[in-house]
Every structure is written in C-alpha cells, then in structure tokens.
Amino acid sequence: MLEAAGYPKKTGAMTAVSKRVNVPHQTLGRWFRQENNPPPAELVQEKKRDLIKDLTALLHLSIDKALMEAGEASYRELSTGIGIFIDKLQLLTGQPTERTEQNVTVSETERKERLIAIFDELDHRRPVA
Image (cartoon, rainbow, N blue to C red; front, side, top):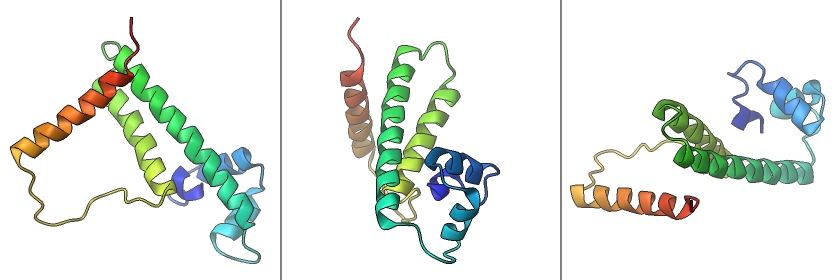
C-alpha cells in the first residue's frame, strides 16, 4: 500500500496509508524498512486485496463517468485519473507499470484492431439511455 501510495517519494503517503489501515506510521515505517518484526502476512494480503478491490471499483467508476461526461471534463483530466488507477493496480498486482522492450513494432492493422477492441469494450459498459 505504501508503494502504491507513492511512498517514500510522495509527501503524505505514509500518513494516508497509516490512517487507512489504522496502523501507526512509525510501525509502517519499520515494516517498510524491514526493521524489527515484519507485518503479519495475513494483514498484508487482506489489505492488498481490499485496496485492489477498491481501486478496481474506482477505475470502473472513472471509466463510466468519463463515458457519460466526456463533454464536461477535459480529456486530460479523465485520462490522468484513469491512468493513475491503472498504474496503482499494476503495482499492487505485481505487473509492470512500464514497458521496456526494444524495437517492438506494431503494424497499423494491429494498432487499429487493438483500438477497436478497447472501444468495443468501453461501448459495452456505456449505460443505455
């Protein structure tokens, strides 16, 4: 949760996580630095599952809101929020947050097919008026 919140680079991340999990920030700091006793494995897994569930729900809500109010919010605002949620989910589920392959080429046809698949998926989620 600390890593997903941006700790240690982001100011206030430790305090936010401390409040969310109701664990003193000194204890979280020791756990993060792997000092003394580590956090209970069950607690780590439970909180990680909770956070993944919450972030997934927020991601879906954000996408739904973006589809409904795309005209009112800027594209930058919508895509930034969605990108942050996706990035946090990637971190929590152990998936990469960036791609580092070299010389990867995607044909124009593959690119179009990927975009069509993404928009088809989003279109299915759009509420019917």
